[in-house]
Amino acid sequence: MNLSLKQRGRRRLALAGSIVSIAALALAGCASGGTGGGDAAEGGEDLTITFIPKQLNNPYTDVVLGGGEEGASAAGFASSQVVGPLDASASSQVSFINAETQAGTNVIVIAANDPDAVCPALEEARSGGAKIVAFDSDTNPDCRDVFVSQVVAKDVALIQLELISEQIGGEGEIAILSATANATNQNEWIAFMEEELASNPDYADIELVTKVYGDDDDTKSFQEAQGLMQAYPDLKGIISPTTVGIAATARYLSTSEYKGQVALTGLGLPNEMRPFVKDGTVTEFALWDPAQLGYVSAFAGQALADGTITGAEGDTFEAGDLGEREVGADGIVIVGPPTVFNADNIDDYDF
Image 1 (cartoon, rainbow, N blue to C red):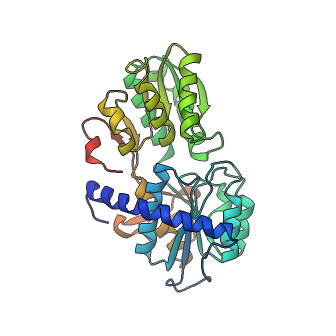
Image 2 (image 1 turned 180 degrees about the horizontal axis):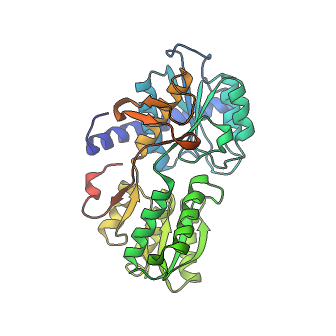
Image 3 (image 1 turned 180 degrees about the vertical axis):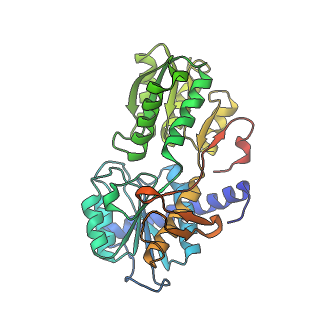
């Protein structure tokens, strides 16, 4: 995986196509009452891994899962698959977890739509011998072995505040357009933002007037953006810490009277945000490398399954071409720092 950013981007695009096929096959398997998987194994060559994202058919998730599939292959899993719901509701992942438990899957990698709703099913899976890796959006820590986090959560919150402050001149009303109200990662970032707004004198003239939720649905996010403009005519900026939300909001702003008047930043995919950066709707936004999140998660699962790590603080494991990773406090593994994208560098990225 020692490839340039552009090279890795091209690889991910190819993988994204295979993920669609894998997901479709997995869904068909669920409909017939089984998901494949394999017998529990100690040696490594027979290990199976299944990824359960918050929802399928999400462009960001496709990139994460592409990295996961690449990592699973590099780590030596005998088989890997993707299953998951088409909506991001709290309990929508439970039936998929139960199916993996019945199939004897060795490693389940999950991005939780709700930190607690999935716990009983995950506990049953662990009782059956499965190792649980949470990624992207954490479960209750009692229900998993490790959580692979994109970046340090507070850093994600602070970079978005810095960007919006710069873009609105350090003063005025802002709003947050998030994903779902129960998403662990979104709520953690928002909590850090609120804490920073209340305590940092640099943000004393910025007022967070509301938080709304697009449920990571393009149409609902677009409508929520429209609603913000109508409800808050003095709004100067929007932070959308979700790739679906920021793209939908940018699309609305780009053809509205608010283009160039209301700033927009948050977390987005370069390929989705490129036209809005080039037409001046968006100045800067941020994100980490989503493929690396899936890639490291696969290696964490392999290390748990073969006993290299237990999830204890200080454990270390090799994550293929990305090198050694260490388990930190509360079983959290950090992938890497966020990157800021703007007109000067967005063409350097292809995902």
